[in-house]
Amino acid sequence: MSVTSDTHPVLVLHAEDNVAVALAPLAPGDDLGKGQGKVTQPVPAGHKVSRTPISAGTNVLKYGQIIGRATEDIPAGAHVHSHNLGMGDHKQSHALATELPQIVPSESADQFMGYHRPSGRVGTRNYIGILTSVNCAGSVAKFVAEVAEKTELLKEFGNVDGIIPITHGSGCGMSSKGEGYETLFRTLTGYAQNPNFGAILMIGLGCEVMQISTLVGHEGIRDETRFRFMTIQQTGGTRATVEAAQPILRELAVEANKAQRAPAPASALTVGLQCGGSDGLSGITANPALGVASDLLVAQGGTTILSETSEIYGAEHLLTSRAATPDIAAALLDRIAWWEDYTARNFGEMDNNPSPGNKRGGLTTILEKSLGAVAKAGAAPMNGVYLYAEPIDRPGFVFMDSPGYDPCSVTGQVASGANLIVFTTGRGSASGYKPTPCIKLASNSDMYQRMEEDMDVNCGDIVTGTTLEAKGQEIYRLMLEIASGRPSKSEMLGYGAVEFVPWQIGAVM
Image 1 (cartoon, one colour):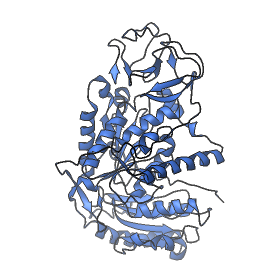
Image 2 (image 1 turned 30 degrees about the vertical axis):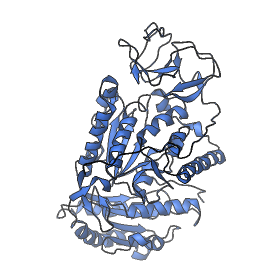
Image 3 (image 1 turned 90 degrees about the vertical axis):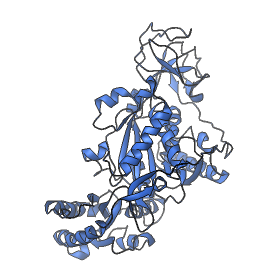
Image 4 (image 1 turned 60 degrees about the vertical axis):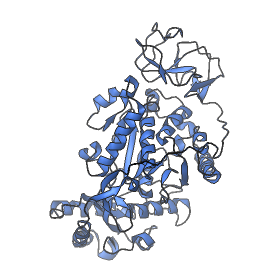
């Protein structure tokens, strides 16, 4: 990565690239530097400018990788974006487990202060959850939480972080078997077992497809001291359920309050790696810096989860080549093939990304966006590929299948066991994910300054001299601090009440 002009900074990411990235707005006549000529059109910050003439049909290269094809002749110094760059045919060859990298285990054992659970996992927060089996129980769950808050039920339980109603839009009007049912089942039982919950009250209506009795029959949620359940119909209706829930919540609070923070190894962290509202600098600053932090955690024996399958499309070869085994690489390609079929049968296409906001930030094709998104994964071997909300059962860097829609993807990661989320953004995503704290990384300094109350770390200074290694260390240390109880910006703002969004697959009937 090099800056080719001091007066009008332009980044060249790879020697073979035929485009550069503008670090500041460029105007016609600005010098591209190093004998590359002058800018011929206005180019917004974060967008691409051609370094050489590019003929129509020629591959456009960024990161040394193909991000699409020119749809018309592009002169040197021109703005390269949606008007002259298209995806073209996506044909990718995949090497399977051929470049297995090595992450050297750390010599020092880092720690954080966490809540040790009977399961052996460690929480970074200690909430009581009111988990609903169906949308029809959502209002009652909120009523239960509201009454508990009004009556200050938690006043004497200082170790409990709060009561969270977990509501959603599914649970009935669906098939009782198949992908959709299995995905929701994994999501609900996964949330019930997330170590950031000290206790769970499950509430159902009674007649729904996703039966409470089936959920509570799951092996991991049979501990009656931490898990209780009820249905509205059997309890006697809305008011009776709200009233009956209060003493149950108190009993659960007594149990959850017994937990106290104690030293835990960094290896007990499972971190969901996310990006949203990406821009042209995301793949240059925040994402690779998070990749450095991911490698640091993996070196401690911890776990990091990359997701958003539709947003690694076109860059999956960078993951398959570093898979720990050929079978793991093949599992990722199977998910890619599933997505190609899934989008086709729903009259979509994989290049539906980037979003309008991504494009305003400088991203043009899904290939370009994916190459930047994969940078969050660092350089560690890929140790596993999991279905959405499937329990993560091995340490290291892994992949979990999910949509690119951020709340839905994070919901799956939390269900899979993530006790911390780190989220990069270039446009300024505003969200949080109770019960799991979310750290926000800004990809550019302008947005960080505008939204500093929402952003935990500014990665924009990477283009002005801060190294990726130093920023990765900063992010890693903040992960340990947030895991130990320091509130993230999203938590301080109160986010997390509406971002539970299970992935709905299949017909709504």
